[in-house]
Length: 307
Ligand SMILES: [Fe+2]
Image (cartoon, rainbow, N blue to C red; front, side):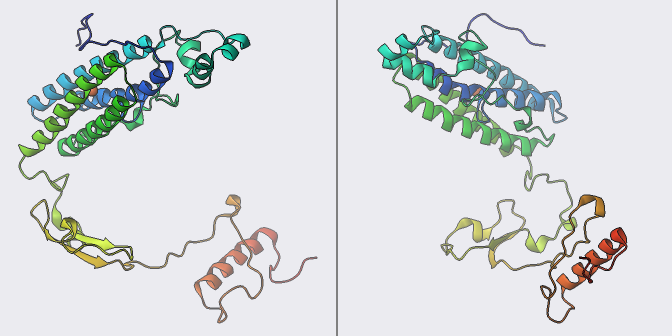
């Protein structure tokens, strides 16, 4: 269960309200790199956790902390919208270019749908998407996903920090940047205390995969790879192989698919002479099959003119 406290997790102060900044802050609420994503990701991981109890509790602690971060940002958006124009009268826009800029740039839904408050969207007004949440039930996979989410979130927070000169907003972001730092460390620390975490999942028998390809860097480019590149030489990070680099070459066949069924209307009829000269190529085989389909539909011989 959850309790709430009327206080914010940290002070949220806006010295110079700015509707455009409110729009920017939405990315940290409802963006793929935002707080709703990590909040729901950690909570769903916790609610489905079959790992040792301390990890479930850890996820619940931090997921709940993230609820407080969503709250802080929602309040920050609302504070940035205080005093925002709510009139579209031409003379107001014409007399005050700043007002014009606001009306041209602020998120209209902040006023129209929310009455000068935050929405569960990203900075482009795209609704939060629950499918961004990663909760695989594999602790290692989830911890790396969590660390990556915190890294993307911290990158976003640094950019939001650069975009404002409002001391209150900068102070709020300085707190969030610090918490993102701890959370990156926290998820990676879990991996450090696990035995043989890689490759995830580590309980799948290695003999069931083609191990000769497990530690090769496939070179698909003419761009040179510097000799000391760690990803192409030395022991693999899971200690189970040795990195090497090989020129990519096809390991499979040229695919040959059967023609589409008639109802799929995918049939094409090549012009005479457009197929392989010997008449025995792959294309000729496809053509022959397609002609069979056509003759079954029309009862005619597609090789003869019907006009
Ligand atoms: Fe957060």
